[in-house]
Length: 354
Ligand SMILES: *Cc1c(COP(=O)(O)O)cnc(C)c1O
Image 1 (cartoon, rainbow, N blue to C red):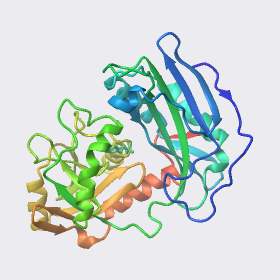
Image 2: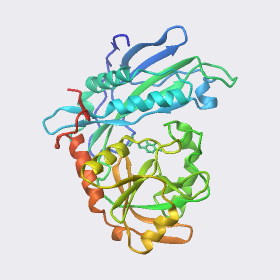
Image 3: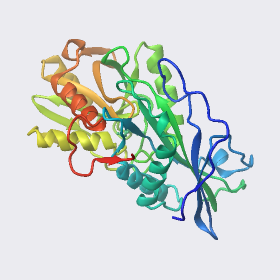
Image 4: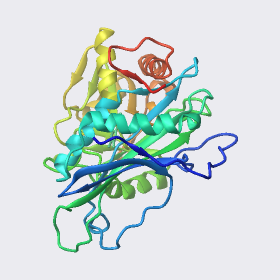
């Protein structure tokens, strides 16, 4: 990558006062880089945060050639700023680009771009407990063209948003509605990549769950409507008879970095992790005879999200009396401990910014 050009804002914004929400306040700068067939990826730059100007015919608006990533910068007790496994986000963005016919960005360029933006806007990384600077890298197809094709020009952008504690009111287990009508992903489709289209297609199920009084949906596989895959936009784990089950990432499940980190920690701690298909009927049967010990979702935003209740067709089961389970709690404490620098990280998990 060429050296990153820096154009600083002349009008620094007011930092938000009081409790931070999620994703509605943005920092002073953003990272941009263009792609054209002639020049490849070029002109990496940090510029004042501002609206983008795009041709209404830009391919992204019509055929959704778009994808994104999500990661956070954390403030440590010592005042430093650090990232959690950003190389894994870079690898995942590269595989997403390949699936969407977008030219790849080298992992080291991705990490350098993230670090440069966080370093420039470091005073936006909040320091209250469990707050962070959420980073949203994304790529869009910019060629103005109504014919269906892979774009020959792209924009890669990173924006940053100070975000509050996900569990400001304490860790409350979520109530989950098992979706047996719509599906999120099919074999051969785009379930394994972070493209916006997956999210657009999931909204209706989310609304259905809310209308029924639930927080989120549990997705079943698209072929049999039988095997558990994800919870909302999180990976999920089920602890049955002491064994942790999570769906394999072979095409229809998003390979979450939190999921991967949980599997690595659980194995170090000596738990048996079964990365294999698990039928919803077996989950409900285990719940009925008291063998379903814990259920939780994993993802960057919430880290670990305990599931307190599952509803499948006309049956409802409560897990762990609606309280957070011990393994769920230990994973949450360990991952956040590592992210905020309170616990020594496994080799390579933490990348300091300053
Ligand atoms: C981003 C995402 C996850 C979680 O991935 P992390 O890397 O752990 O944040 C899980 N499922 C879906 C569908 C996602 O988009």
